[in-house]
Amino acid sequence: MCNYWLHILKDEPHVESCTLALSVSPCEREVDGTKLQTVHYKSWQQLSAALSKVGIGYELLQRAKSTLDSTGLETLHEIQLSPEQLNILGFKEIP
Image (cartoon, rainbow, N blue to C red):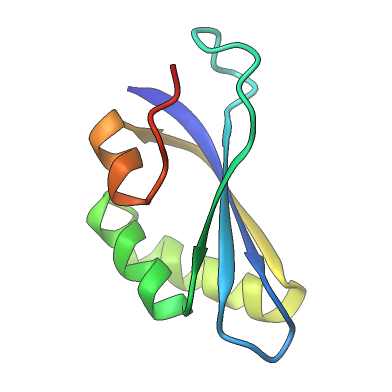
């Protein structure tokens, strides 16, 4: 397992679609030089369902949705994910 930052970007202000970008936590020493990966979701409901499947709690999801609606972006810091959880979110395993 490794710690990641999940960057959620609203594609357009009045559209439900959003992009989830994955980056390795700056505190993570095991992985160096990885590139940012992105996955597109058609709606917040689709994204929040995937995030729930990997263990992101309801309160954190609600706070992320609120920030996303008001600013257009949100970052979830220090999220520990296994290769299987990365796969559920649509990302390729990071070497």
